[in-house]
Amino acid sequence: MSFFSWAIDFILHMDRYLPGYFHQYGAIIYLLLFFVIFCETGLVVTPFLPGDSLIFAAAMVAATTKGESNIFVLFIVLLAAAFLGNMANFFIGGAIGQKIYNKEKHRFIKKENIDSAMDFFNRHGKVTIIITRFMPIIRTFTPFVAGIAKMKTAVFALYNFLGGLLWVAFFLVAGYFLGTNEFVAKHLSLIMMLIVIASLTPPFIAYINKKIKNKKA
View 1 (tube, one colour):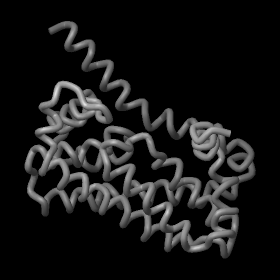
View 2 (view 1 turned 90 degrees about the horizontal axis):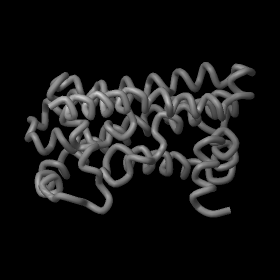
View 3 (view 1 turned 90 degrees about the vertical axis):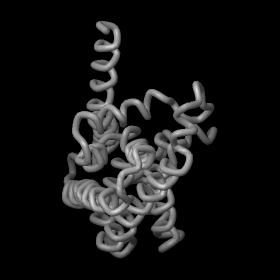
């Protein structure tokens, strides 16, 4: 199995992989989860990493395999990863974001994603930092754009914390309480796909609307 095939299989069947990983490697898996969420939110070159579905699956494991993982430790670890990831992305955006944006093409970063995040900022202001937490891809570029815009660090940190708190808490609670449901357990792959599709729908609609407006202009 190629790495790409394994990655897709892992994302769709995290409930099968994570219990064994926790059992075999213990607390090291908390570090792995921290690393994935930190990179997904903190590096503009890795917006494809699982965020919503990973938190949901981790909470589900905590609910169904007592002793393997702890929901409270998960909350602290994932909130720290989400907060620190965004802060790192914010500082990167402030330091080199404008130079990257001014380039016509970049090998690993799509300019359209930065434009989408900028569009959300123009329409919703600072609350964008909270709203886009629930929107894959755009949430990775939001702190980057905030850095480019030279938002005050204290203001960004406040909205960043609130957004991260709501995001992590929502998917942890959903995964923890729905994870013990027999229907959810049997159809988890489908639910993972629905989470991804539902999360991607708002940015996709925003992208289509922008294309339509550009054509009219």
